[in-house]
Length: 170
Image (tube, rainbow, N blue to C red; front, side):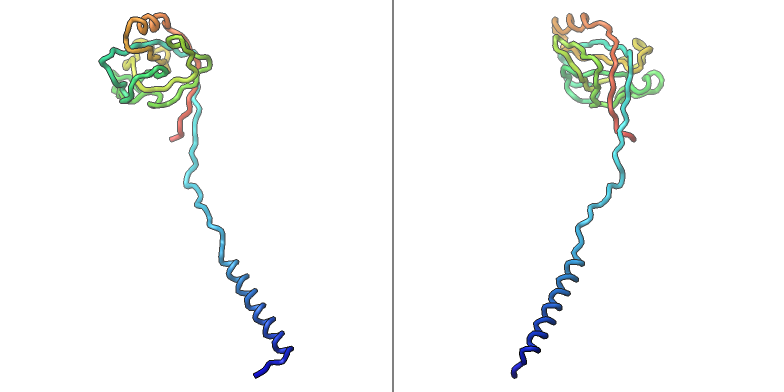
């Protein structure tokens, strides 16, 4: 069975058109993978405070952990609890959350080193008796209670600081 030249060209054209139609149909079925949209965006709030008291404290060498469960380190601070303990507050719930980084407007000198940031790891003045006029008072860790740490913390005295921190919106 022989096909004429004309019929052979027509058959080849139909096969090419059929293959082209299959390729077009198949490529239209392949859609790029869609990434799921985030269900919620993360929002953050910047809190800023001015003219708050900053004091210094030392830790006795027997106290290994702060109220957050972290070890003390230079650049760490204690803050008030969210509510005074004598008013039903919890001393383990600080007014600024644990592990929050505080960004200072001016550096604080701690044992001869300038610190531009501090991290909240502890609570102090749990009844707001010492620093009730500074709700965002910070108590800066100055060492383990050796002679020079005590001298440096006494020399630190009471300073006034401006700082800010960032929290995730809840």
